[in-house]
Length: 462
Image: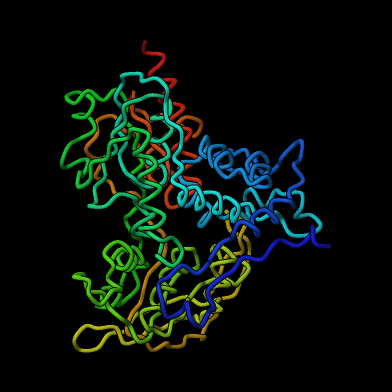
């Protein structure tokens, strides 16, 4: 039965990791990775590749892992992915590549994500870099944003021979990878910075502290600075709130602010110059991956944490692995529950939140059953902090300062799915700036599609 069960992955003990910001999952070693790789059936029609948004040749790299050829496996992955060490950690493989794995029909799917992580981490330790372009095209492309879509687009264009410059608004590159995902899921120095260095090793230039729309506009980049095409991968950093009474109280945060302070500015470190509230009892509103990240961060800062979500456990949008880790660490889930009012003391600080019980009614437009309030079921949760994790939308700064750029009613940039082309000639877009908040790998897939679209566009202008 060995072939039906995946090789387990070592993790920090739940009680220990709940008190630190070190990585939870420890990954495979060489022996474990090669043993897991042997479970791959090397299908002639690999459905796992169809499930991968960036179309990695999964059977090929796993076959190379089987024989110990880590460098070959890394170069195979790097042909399709600019961020393998990131994807190996944060991709929802269970609903993508692993969800399509034939092994998963009668047993455990092959642990594709953990094998990708092993390859990327081992390649980093050995100093292996992705292969760059053999010839330069002599054409300049600007990439706005250094998150997963921007890094992917820039890396792919550089491999094609383009002269690429990334413009990043913050003081540190990485976008959501550095400000949104906690250290215990995605180490910043050991992983993210190294992945960015790999993209730069392809010849990509990176300028930080450049706010497109204020420092310089897209029109100026194209008309005055000689960029022949622009990719907008600026993400979706504008948080949403519930607009319930008391939401303006002190101690109410967006998940974006809470995580940015902790992740990017290291506010969890007592020596940090950026303070962060260390709540005693915290309520996190929402059920997605960002909510899990915020809840687990608050827990590590010493809080008792409640996750309040208006649907049931089956409807939680967060990855099952993240929900499982949160429960193991002691986070309390108040499901089928929705906030209706936040309370504050005479000084304006949060003292508690009133919630109402919900039950699931008929399915909504997305197919999920709509939550309905249960009359008379209100109850209070005492707390000194509330973190709202209800999704985000794109900042309108770029779209409002660019002539001829169409946006939709959700303030997202309108772009063609197959190539990222917007309504403005030469301007492409992808990732959360187009779709609204989504996953890292879907943003990467959009960046990859746009790189191909930009290449076709610039090639047609010759």
